[in-house]
Length: 189
Image 1 (tube, rainbow, N blue to C red):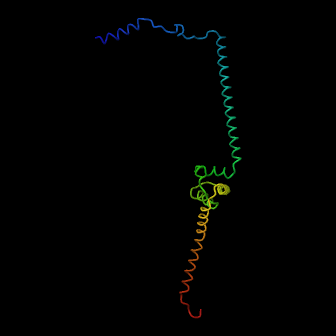
Image 2: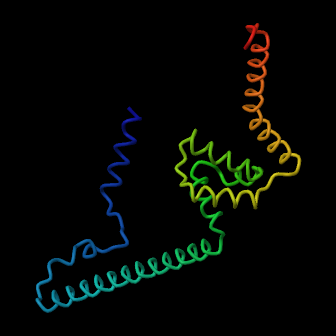
């Protein structure tokens, strides 16, 4: 029973006394509708001028952003103009699939870069036009040349591959000539 009396007594105390507020009763009432036409026109002019200023600020901000983007684009174009054409083409064609750090660590001779670009074009489907492939190869061979040991290996393998068909043809020829030497000949021929 005691547990019921306490909440009832608390509710009675709170509702019976007036709670003080920092606002008066008139502060809770809205301003109401504006009855005077001149006051309404003045307030509408203030609202319109504020909207106009906001639109001008937005336009100025958009203009400043466009100028900044144009400046950045001009800087990028100037940077691209300073870079060698081979470097730009390498970034365009090779950078789409490879990280530039990976490209910078690769080292080949001119022959190695030619074979690498050919492999990318034929086996991996890279769409590099032949004239651009030559510029890319020249740039990479100049800037990322192989050390002498790697150059010997690359050119040695190329020479070996070039000599294989010759060796095959010589072996075939020697087998034919050996076979014709064993055939008995008819007298008088």
